[in-house]
Image 1 (cartoon, rainbow, N blue to C red):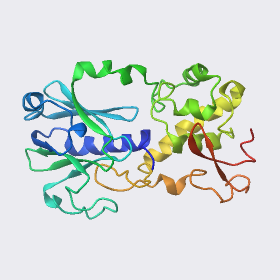
Image 2: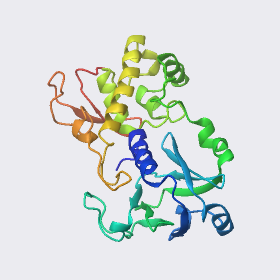
Image 3: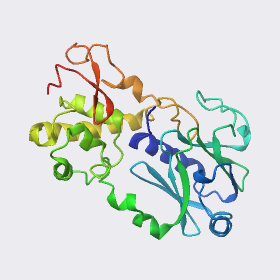
Image 4: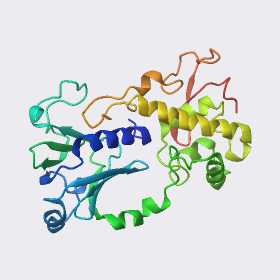
Length: 290
């Protein structure tokens, strides 16, 4: 099971931005306190009656800004989903769904109703995700926000920035460094494997042993695979869906991830799956020599 990474969370952000900005929250209910750990007094004063004015993302975290100067900070964790339903399909499966049926269902933890009778559902089978209310000026002061690395799809993510961040983990494997959210924001197992294959770097190579030319290629590959995944709506493993409950299709275009026992697209050598940085890791033993 895979945690949503940057392209998946960004896809949800883009969908919600189109669907719920400007809507007024009329009610909220939840069935699991850890999924919605907020005081009733704050909910009544700062959430009910407020409008969604903006939706931002930082790494794998969504920030829904409210007109009350509070924000809903959402972490999907492993199995979290944010799915919108209009009035025409509330309580029924969306006609384009392949993973989401009737809502609410047994995995629904939080239901937001808007003043126009549309709904936003926070589903989470494993109950690790959460929706927290935080004063908007305080969001930047959350420990995670202060520690997280640069965004790989921002214009200021230059090679110089990338190289300097990696040097913080020079004695780690390159894959471990890529997975470290304090080094880079939003990269997880799928896009680490895909980027390293593209740059012909073995995932277990120490950062200090990767040449500058290969680091430059890796920088380009990270940007390439993240943009391609955004174009394809992210990667659906078991639980990830976009804001309308639809699957992402990036896995169909992956070059190495989940391709074990298949020939490498570049050289024809059989792709293997091993373990690096505590994670299942896909690589070509010929293209990515250690």
